[in-house]
Each structure stands twice: as C-alpha cells, then as structure tokens.
Length: 274
Image (cartoon, rainbow, N blue to C red; front, side):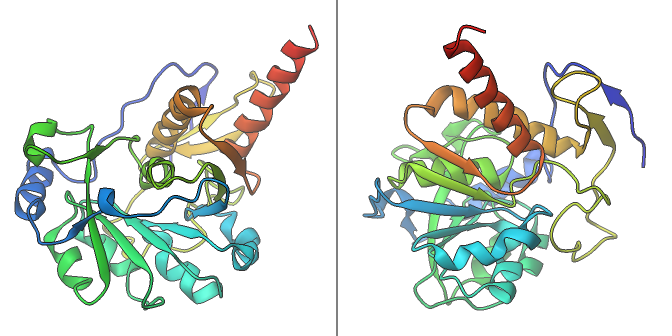
C-alpha cells in the first residue's frame, strides 16, 4: 500500500470498473429488455425520510438504526450485509456496477416487495440472477454517449459510484430528506474499506491509497482510494446543484461526515460575519 500526502484537492480521475467497450456491450444487450423503467414508478414521498445505505466501515456501528425507517434504499454490494444484519424492510436496491462480480453480493433473499433498480450497463448475468425478483431498469449516463440508450430513454446522472447515483435516484422518486449510512468515503482507522470483506480479494482491489486532510495540513487525516475521492467530488457537485432540493444527514464518522460538518461550520461563520 502506497500512501502520499495531498494538501489541496482540485480534481480526480476515476477509472471505470470495466472497459468502456464492455459497458457499451452490456447496454446494447440490456437496453430493450422487457422490464419496467424506473422512471415509470409512481413513488412520490417528499415529506418522508429515506435511509440510503452504502457499505462503508461505519455501517457496522449504525446499521441498527435502519429498523426505524419506513423507506430504505440499499446500494449495490451492501445488499447481503444489510439483510444479514438488520431487520429493516428494504424498499429499493440500486445496482449500477458493470462487473458481474456484483452478483456475489446479491445472494440473500429480501422481502418479495423489494424493488431492484438495475442499470442497463450491468452485466446481463445480473438480470438473469435476479429474474425472479421485481426488477426495474434504468440508464446510467455520464460515461458513455447517451445516444447508446436510444430515443425516449430517460438517463440518470450522478457521478462515479452507486452511492451518488442512489442519491439522484432518491431525488427522482420524490424523497428530499436523505439519511446516508455507510457513506464514509474513506477507509477506517484500521484500513477497512467496507463493513464487510471483499468477496473475491484476488479480483477486487482498492489500488493506491492517499492520505488527505480537508482542513489544512494539520487537520484530521483520512485515507482514501481513488473511487472514494471521486465520490467526494461528485457529492460536492450534488450539494451545489441540489442543495435547495434535499436535506442531507450523514451518519458515521467518515470523511463525508467531516466535509458536511466543515461546510456547516463555514456557513454559520459566514452568517455571523466571522
């Protein structure tokens, strides 16, 4: 593991999990599947909070809270961990990883009423694996030319991770009070990347790890993988674009929570004229 110091962050490049040509093949195979589109769902729950659950290390400490929610949306690989460790009802599962390895994290059976929101860029084997579940298809824009989806298809943006895509998905379904669990955007102090281990550590890797501090070289240090940095920048963009549309609460003690706390502190200082 290589660690380097970064004092100022101005941008980040994230490499996709699969080559672009493979993602395009997935889309071309899946785009016209006879599945209901997510955009056709009738949900509109503007005044009710939704827990959006990522797989970050802090989920181990906060997962007990999920049972208190009427609406829960689980992101990708956190699926099995949440089912095994919480009695919450899962309303939605969002998957956009183009690698068939995500199937390894979709082995448990949730309620028959759980809706699986699967991106057309996912491997066709994901759709086959979930053929007995309530699957709805959606189209993940940003990486590819949106023309690949064909005319009349609604495309959802949102960044480089399933977590930020899920935030946009929740907004599109009418939720505005977003409670984020397992959204650490960093490794834990003992370098755990998720609340659970990789299913296939020979094929799943983090790459280089970077040490950063948001509030200056003497501030609190966090260790991040490349995709975590990408998620951090994407989240900043989402806040800038949709702050008027959402109330965000981050649970846990990770980098994203720290960013939100710093942002709130600066807002208060500005309001007080400091």
